[in-house]
Amino acid sequence: MRMRSSAAVAIGALALTALAVPAAQADGHGGDTAITKVTVNGGKNVVVGTSLVKKFTVSVTAKDDSGIEGADITLYGPAFGMFTSTAHCSGSTCTASFAVDPKVDLPYSNDIAGTWYVDAWVDAKDGDYVWKEKAASFKFQRAASQTVNAAPEPVKKGKTITVTGKLARANWDDFKYHGYTNQPVKLQFLKKGGTAWTTVKTAKTSSIGTLKSTVTASVDGYWRYSFAGTASTPAVNSTGDFVDVQ
Image: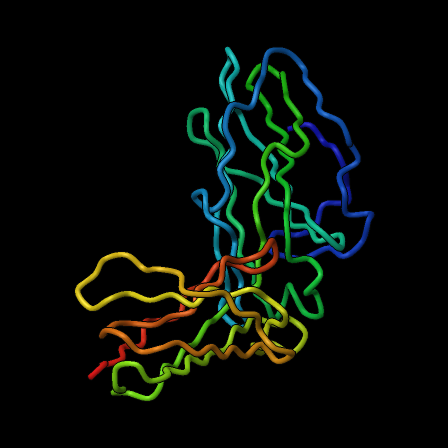
C-alpha cells in the first residue's frame, strides 16, 4: 500500500497534537477507484462511559475494476483527537476495528467529545487509489444517565405530584458521572394501559444537573424525564415511575 504519513498513531491510542493529522489534506484519486459507502459503528453514535472499553468498527466500501486491495482509516475530532487503523478487506468492503479505553485513551479529554470525521485511503489491486477527507461524520459522545422519582405514591386525584430527577454524564477527567447543567429536559407521561408518551412540560437542569417539576394528579400512569441529547452527549430517557392516583 502507498505511504502517506509517518504521523499515524497506534490503533486505540489517542493523539492530542496537530501533527497527528495525515499529510494529505485534499481528496485525491489515482485511476477509477471510488469510495461508495462509509459506515461507523453500524450507523450509531460512538458513546463512551467511564470504565468499559468501547469497541466499534468502521467499514468503507469502494469500487475499482481490478478489485480492492486494502485501506487505511483515520478518525479525527475536536481538540486534535485522533484514532487510526489499517482495515481488513473482504471483497469491496474494508473494515477497521477500534477499541477505546477511557482510562487509557481519554484522560483529561472531555473536549474531544462532539462531531468526528472519517478520512479514508483505499488502494486497488492495480495500483490505483482514492483518498477522501471527511468521507463520513459521526458523534463521539460522553455516556449519560437520567433518573426520575415521582411522589407521593399513591396520591389523591387533584393533588400535586412532584417529579425530581438528575441528568448526568461521563467525565473523563476523574472517570465519574457529574450533573449536566442548564439543559432542557422533557417531563413526559404515559397513561396506564397507553402506548405513547406525552410531553407535559420542559424543565432545565440546575447547576448540579438536578430537575424538579410539579403536576396535578389526574389518572394512573408513568412519569419520566427525556433528554434529547447534544453533539457531545447522547439522548437518554429515565425509566418510568408509576403513580397510583386514588
